[in-house]
Image (cartoon, rainbow, N blue to C red):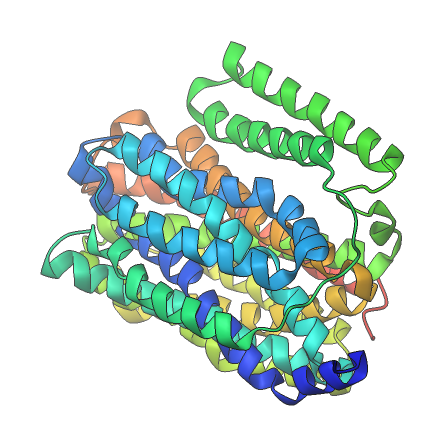
Length: 470
């Protein structure tokens, strides 16, 4: 029987094959998210529903993922990262087909929730897998290269979304995941090693309380924009607070908690995680709102919107690997601060978008934000994972992924809240805006983008505070 050191040496030798396998599966989630955001106006019109209802198509997916990532991270530590990853990949592939066959907007939302269950498993452990198989001095480079799959997915998504919708129907945007998923599953089964962290029992009470807290909180944010502080919204935020208190009590008293809260005593881990959440919140304010601006104000077609939205992820893809490699040599603090600051500046420029704009006018702003994101993400992820003890890499990966996806969901909900608060209902109901309606809609966009800029400024501040040089 091979020794532990021999097995570890073998895994290290084929670490880049493991990275390739993780990247192949990792490209699916970003493709799915970016496709849906770009063609969401088309889905809204197809089913004849409101933005508030259609908003649940991306939101329920992110909400389900965010609510379960912590649980799946701990599950990976106990049962193995490979098992959790493969189960999630299979579930995601199957439910993609169900989403593509949805007969109504409500069935689409239901299938997206189930798809989020699989995506959560698939997305909870990649950071743990890569941190385990790569040496510390290569970690930033590996995470930077892994960011290519995320950025490539985000880049391909808008183009594929616009193209497939123009060729036949929005339904193809989900069906495209099936062949990619099958290939990714077969490759992962062969390549990814069996890795585990800290063994133990499943903290069911902690998992349930975390799910209820996150789900109720994000439901509150979504509903308060249209329903105000009524019975439903007050009940939702009350449940979220109670569940949050229960979660904290359970995790501080359980003999084998789902989340080792001692991780947050490390300033790099705690503030780096918060910075990630803030960055993705600001990112999804932009990603969610900009397609509506392009369709309703500028009157672009779906394929043109998709092509233009790729400016953001292409910029991330071009920068992230170099930023990750640079963080291995120079440290992560300065790069994270610089990247978040550039994101804030880009969102300020987005707030000055005019009623009439050329593709170049919008494209360079999106690329500017992508530049900042590419510089920020790899060093920040490296800092957070590098500060985590090896037995808890699954939990740390789950926490970081939870922050990312919660940030996405908060960004979408905050964008909708600001828009519905500032734009008259008559303007929000129109598919194509002009004159005073367009100006009113732009006014709401301006303050939403500026709020996103504020979040990016806070991300830069939190990145500056701890000693990120690990």
